[in-house]
Image 1: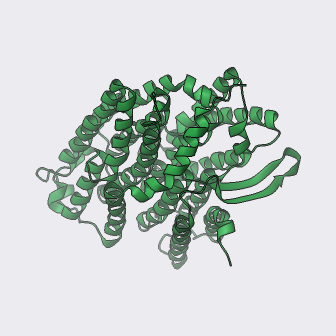
Image 2: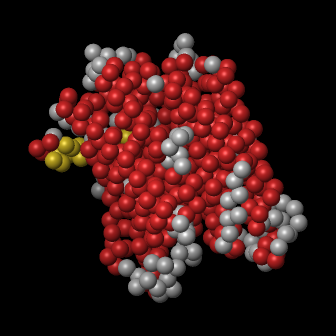
Image 3: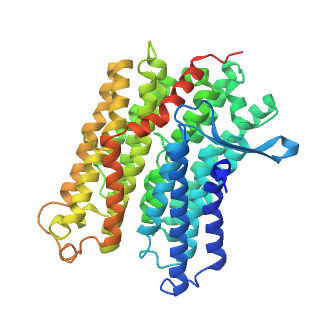
Length: 507
């Protein structure tokens, strides 16, 4: 059987089917029963199969092919001219790989931790994986919207059922923020449909629109995607969601779901309304720089490790939006592609680093049930292997050369420098602030004397925890030393995107 013609459908529906099967079978709410063990094993096998399919996709992906690859197009809703239309290019393929890579690690990390309804917990993650891959693959606007909104449901349940003490507040805030933004995106899609009589995203990208219309559509997209990134000032839901989410929820939220906003900008905003994007580009640059600098100072003041990493994520995602929107600040094309590719590399890199940081916090939380920085101190004395990993990921988070954290940030700063000295100055400030808040946390948690009896009783990493952190560490190191395979995947698609958005669409 040839998998290639339907590989995207399999990548989407295999984990969703696996997740539904887990719900139907159930585990009698007993985490120690043999049925629960089978549920965990099933979740792991399904996520690993999807990872293998992701690798197969990577092997068969052609870096220099123009247009979309692995396209599937079937009639879905005849009366509205809606299609089940899938396809990927050099922008969506790395994000699908990241999703398939992170999910098995989340399953393994939650293996022993989740005692309450493990089957439902793992099923939520599998369904979420399928829906996220659906977002990255959908080329029909209505299909894109269905996947985009559906993602909220499993994440809502993950935080709302398995979250912390204020989980209800956090889930409602998360849901309302993201839902309200998305409704405006739907209105924009309906308007575009009224002009083209279909929901084909590729048609939307070629359709001429007046500047006024482009401005309105850009604002609708902006509110949908800015909440997801999240950009300042609509970022306040993220620290709450992270703090209350279980470790696996935090990892997926930071590693993949935040990338949806960046992906929305580069897949929809830039090619569909290029003139509207240019009109608001200065605003986007200012908002990105505020996120990079201001949020960096906010992170310095945090007492909760998860909150600190959550604010750090907002600052790092500021690089992504900066890389996308400095495009119009160049006199020539030289730095434009560099900024966009740097932003894409930053998305993948941040996915690995922030996921690893949240897993490190999860390891400590599983042992001491505290995320407060003040409750720790001297952890390196009792957990030397864990301390080595935590320091490594902290350095990567601060942008140490040789790690993936450096590559994306350096490319965006370099592009910013070509565009405007002050953009580069303020974006480079985050390297100092990132080092300040990350190392400040490491100093207080990892180093020093053992400050209390709870820390004195800590055990180092078990084999399962070591494996997860080692795999993520290898990923961070590999992209840091050899980013070429990742960059090569994106290069051609980014060149095509630049050609597209340079041409005015004002009718």
